[in-house]
Length: 326
Ligand SMILES: Nc1ncnc2c1ncn2[C@@H]1O[C@H](COP(=O)(O)OP(=O)(O)O)[C@@H](O)[C@H]1O
Ligand SMILES: [Mg+2]
Image (cartoon, rainbow, N blue to C red; front, side, top):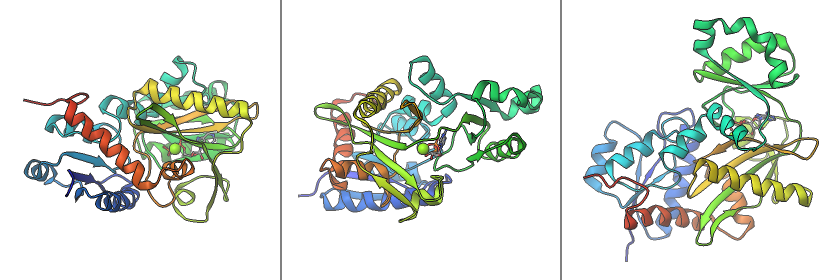
């Protein structure tokens, strides 16, 4: 007997299109082998018409980056009355914008590296370029990292070791988004901490420790097999472990991430885990971190896909958490 109809949204026009297609293909395979009726859909001008004609029971969002992860597609699916996997509109929008998310972390006692946000308009309209000398007094001494406020997969991100490199790094970041974050570089183990909601409530999966062979966990290190070593669970002292778990849970709840999130952190020399960001549509590729963490607790890729799909379908049944429309 075939199960519900699930439309997998994948591809799209974001810079992470290829990553999304890789995630989507695996999700399609998993859903198919779980017995669902599966429709793989790219984001095209015909999407809404297709969704209205096909009337899937839910959408599985395998999109990453702008439009897929920032609340845009979520808002559209709310309008159409189709439940979908992952966080809702508000959580997506808050988490996607690092400038907003970091403010929320600061206001809620969640350690995040000191930083400055500068928008393109602040440069164009208000002469922010004349205050670049103040940056170390707020964000800390070099090395600093400069990145777009709204982007993923380390695109537009540069670590800079001296002030002479700042202007170019800012231009790069502002080529990707209308706001740039200049943040203290934290030297220490990097962690990705996945959070899943299950029957028993929020479950924090074992932190994955990331050791990029090049020293920078950039696009290539993220998606090329063999470029990065992963340790699951991360090699941490017990006290740090507990703090990492507490913070991941707190970030997930603070932003309202509902079914799933992945919180990226770096542990400072004093053992403080600093939260860099929270991802609301974590990668599901061969080298991705959420599937890796799930495996460590005996959850297969299929189990994760099944859990997220069931959570979306339960919203259809209960009519909660999405507008049912008229
Ligand atoms: N402040 C920082 N200190 C150390 N490493 C950082 C810092 N900010 C970013 N990185 C590195 O760059 C990667 C991407 O940065 P992140 O803030 O997670 O943005 P995104 O993944 O959305 O591009 C991180 O996984 C980490 O390796
Ligand atoms: Mg990240």
